[in-house]
Amino acid sequence: MEIWLWVMIGIMALAIIALLIKIYFLQRAAKEIADAFADRLITDTNTLIDLSCNDRYMRKLANTINIELRNLRAQRHRFWQGDKELKNAVTNISHDLRTPLTAICGYLDLLEQEEKSEKAKRYIEVIRNRSEMLMQLTEELFRYSVIISGGHNSVKEPVAINRVLEESVAAFYTALNERGIRPKIQIPENDVIRTLDVSSLARVFSNLLNNAIKYSDGDLDITLSETGRIIFANTASGLNEVQVGRLFDRFYTVETARKSTGLGLAIARTLVEQMDGTISAGYFENKLRICIFFPNCK
Image (cartoon, rainbow, N blue to C red; front, side, top):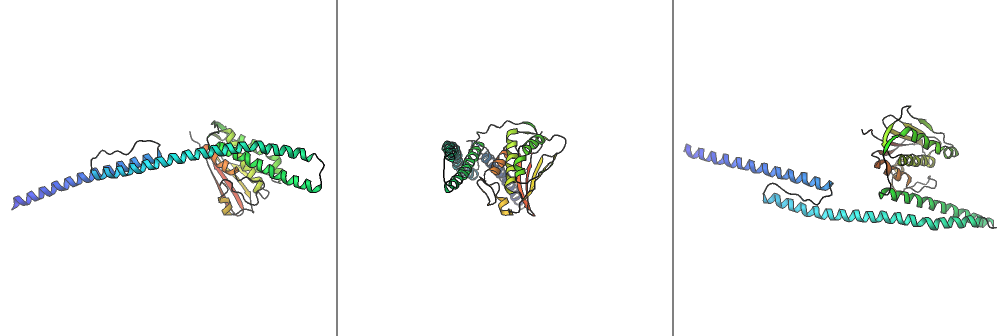
């Protein structure tokens, strides 16, 4: 009786060992599938998931995932191709609009030299304002399409953010004064050096200063810290939290904006992200704060 008991115990032990080995190989196969699937999602490769074990159920699972990966890859390529074609079309259209708009503005210049009634003068002034707004939108659209389509040649080099910020504010001094804005600037004495594209950085500051001209109630505080954080803050009673949350959306404008295309901050966000920085906007107690951060990546 004892012999049969030991035989049964031995058989059960062998079965348990075999089951544990089976579970180990299944777990390893599941981990291989999970790791390979995660890798295929973030890399553009034609390599499919392959397993080291021969379990038919796990191989069936891997084959099913491979089928879905092929479909996902095909859809991704169609999206990339369509997105590229759309960006190129927008670039071409915005470029082609320049010629007729330039001609319209030229004929308006000639028309203003002719004798005309007061009503005709008023109509011409309206046409002039609309033409200038359309010209501005076309220029912004062209620049934005060039930036997002990769046509913008970015050259990164060590840049003193202090100097670029000072030059940008100086360039907007007259425009700020016309709106009654006296900017308060806090900049550290030591240069804040980051590896950036100087023209892109200047464009970001230019767009943020334009934004202050549109929305500020008359104040503007600009702060640069040695950590690479730049804050543009101004009172903007005409805004609310919902509007501020959409300021970086393409073509989004609010009623208080003057001749706004809705692309300035979208361009700023794209350029900042291309330089490995972050940009965000907040609104508290009628105060709009736009914060840019460029980490010191050595």
